[in-house]
Length: 254
Figure: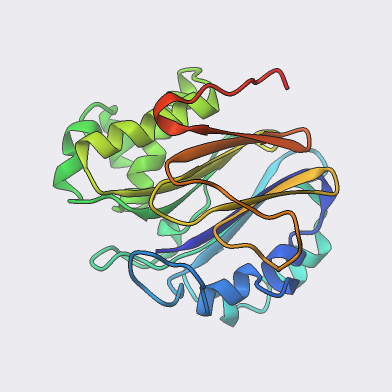
């Protein structure tokens, strides 16, 4: 059911968390510790999104296992960025395996990832999909639940919703339509990072003036905090706050 991680803070190279940590995202791609919901390997693609020196978004995605790629380790070590989002994919049976289905999805400055599955797909969320403009549905990157979730979230963001409100409201809306869905979402615009723990593992750590959020801790160093089930977090300026998704009210002035 996929693994993902995100970072916001002072510039750093993504390679440390993706490849070099004892329990890096690379290791989680073939030896995850806490999948909860099926699957034992994340071999159906991967992706990394980050922001360059001018603040422009850059993405690198492939539909092959992360451990087979020779380019990303060098690239991720050469980059220093104030924010990034990376993911490895374990595709839901019946959903296609190709680059367009791999997180992170992107629009403008936004990067998005979904760890989980929409229960009863696609019938359960057909009514929600029907509220989107037809052109949005016709131009989905992939016929997958994650791509639709991104289209629904992107529609909220374009309407000016606060990212935390948009993410938590989407989780509640999809859960009502498709009970039992697994909805660990992660979103960043390079300054703010929002994530949810909804039936999947998620941990957070403030370190060196930044914040790391990951499906699984990358090491055994102190400071990792499990995000409670059905909670969301918002990270920025080196700090983070948690709240219950059903009644999320975070002090955004902190």
